[in-house]
Length: 63
Image 1 (cartoon, rainbow, N blue to C red):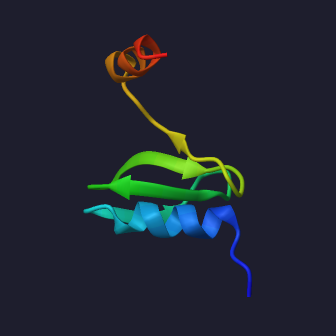
Image 2: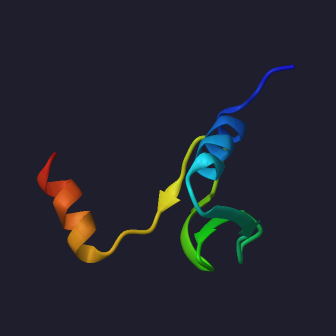
Image 3: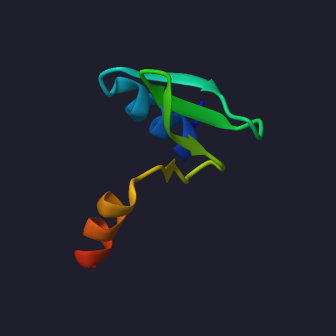
């Protein structure tokens, strides 16, 4: 049986401490920590990670 990228990514995210899986408002898979969304899977190989503006700016500065 083959595994797609979303299965592997989901397993990785669920291995993080405190991360739980839920239904996202658009029918996708959502991941939460302490009942707060940290991101969701909109496809089979993509994870939309929610970041604050300072966190996002820090990552963009490294590019």
